[in-house]
Amino acid sequence: MTRPLLIVGGGPAGMSAALAAAEHGVRSSVVDEGLDLGGQIYRKPTRPDGGAPPHRRGEQLRARVAALAERIEVKRSTAAWGIFEGKRVAISQDGASELLEPQALVLSPGALEFVPPFPGATLPGVMTPGAGQILVKTMGISPGARVVVAGSGPFLLAVACQLVASGVHVAAVLEASPRAPWLALPLAGFRTPGLLLDGIRYLARLRLAGVRVLHSRIVVAAHGDGALREIEHAPVDADWNPDRTRAVRMECDALLVGFGFVPRVQLAQMAGCRLEWRPEVGGWTPVRDENLATTVDGVYAAGDGAGVAGALVAESEGRLAGLAAAHRLGALDAARFAALRAPIVARLRRLAPLRRALDAISLPRPGLAQLVDDATTVCRCEDVAWRDVREAVRAGCTTYRSLKVATRVGMGACQGCSCWPGVARLVAAETKGSPESAGPASPRPPVRPVTLGELAESRIAP
Amino acid sequence: MEHVEFQLNGEAVRCPSGLTIAGALFHLRRTTTRTTRRGAPRTLFCGMGVCCECVMEVDGRASVRTCMTLVRPGMRVDAQRGDAELFEAS
Image (tube, rainbow over all chains, first blue to last red; front, side, top):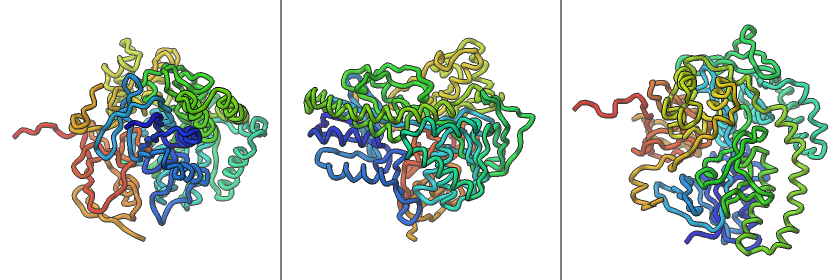
């Protein structure tokens, strides 16, 4: 029997949604692909004798969920691979698929890191800061002997600190944005001193470890034969256009590169939710009302997957979505819902200014579209070169669907999840338009690798 | 420290327990998970199950995301070849 509430994604938003609903007696299932709840930010170490101690807030949320096991069912290592009309969600666990038909659905899938295509980006050893963080934080494994962390945003500093704390040699941190606006952050963040202090602590630790943080620099190419051997980085202008004549080389065997985050909207799209273009929070996001309801009846969206804003916002949004779902399911009357909602809204308002200031500094600028050359791979899954996509664009293909048909870009296992945000920017630069006009990638179930045998066995007929 | 043994591309290897397959590959410094249709080697990239760069054949099952799967004792893990001929002449 499907429980009345289904939550897809067990990070801070998903756990909070389940907890809030459970407080009012609503029974839910939380589906998550990971080995345990926590999402990326509160990921638990898997190696008993390695890695860093788990994040305290993550431990608290997991413990609270565990204490309510009667009301909150947790399905770990479980992928939601399709959503069909009427909130019917196909999930796969241990090689078996089934269809869940909840009365309310909270989507809290989180975000992925944005890595625009650049020459050498597909070399083994080039990975996202998140991937490097997982290796060192949850398993005590070093991504390399000499690591460069590059891209934009405060996450780079957090990851570099974790690497240093684990004894990994960090050669440099290369931040694309200039230094000056970072120094003005305390003005925006005085109401959220905790977050500000985190940032200051990161910088102090890196300085202590002798790690250089270079601003206004971008990695323009990675080199190596079968594995990363060195990178080239160059100074950039205010729009992040690189000056290659001043590029310098730096030896490293791991490059952790990411320019902020992109909301994961595949599930919302399959559910039929309308999207809107909000570049300030990462790109395409589901349209939501003041209670985080999407345009599809009974479907809510919370956390970074609905607009990138970090773990604290995600937790508050999750709580709001969980209460809204409980209200919809009749477990919470209107007056009580309004009373519980008010402090959450106030908290979200308090968190907003620092976030907006950080976004303004570190959001990707148009210069990132200047990194590709003819042979650069722009779609990792299908190994499609920029030359082929550019020719197709010049021949009139400017949308995800037409380019996919013409070049196979976005046709692989990730269904454009990784590559399309970058390719859309390249298309925009080529057509002198906006990434918005290229549209979002359009996923088709199954969005996760599922065998034909498993599909046949499941008898799921959309 | 506890260790697990498993088969990597037909060879017995060992790593500390509690690692994902992708983590074990970095521990062993033998990172290639798959090759693309143009023969380029690939490995862990996003680390969280989205990009599918780190997929391998695990116990005969194709396209398993190794960043999401823990190493189990005796597991058979094989690289996937994107440039392989699907139907070889018999």
